[in-house]
Amino acid sequence: MITATGLTKRYGSTAAVDHLTFEVKPGIVTGFLGPNGAGKTTSMRLILGLDAATEGSVTINGQSYRDKKAPMQEVGALIDPSAVHGGRSAYHHLLWQAQAGSLPRQRVDDVLDMVGLTEVAGKKVG
Image (cartoon, rainbow, N blue to C red; front, side, top):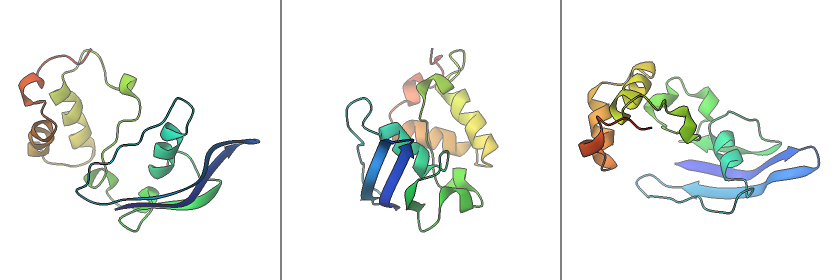
C-alpha cells in the first residue's frame, strides 16, 4: 500500500504539492489525474524518493522507497516516457529493468501479459 500523509513540496514560495494525503491499496487500479502543473509528476517523484518532501511523508508498504533493500522488486515506475529508448522493443526495455532489479526474466512476460502488450512486445517503442 502507498500511504501519503500531508505531503508537501515547495520550490521557493511555490507549492507544487500542498498537504496531499491519500492511500493506494494493493490490487486496486488507481488513477492520478489533473491538469498540467497540478503536481502529479512531483508527487510521483516524492513517492519514489527522487525528490525530498518539504513536509509530510510517503511510504510503500510501511517503508520509504529509499529504505527498501530491493525496491524494484516491489515498485515499478516510469515517470517520463522519453526514458524508453526508441530503438528498443517493450520486451527489451522491461528486460533491462528486470535484470537491473534482479528480477527473473519470466516477470517481463508476466508484466507484458498483465498490461495487454504481449502481441506487440517485439515492436520498437519509438
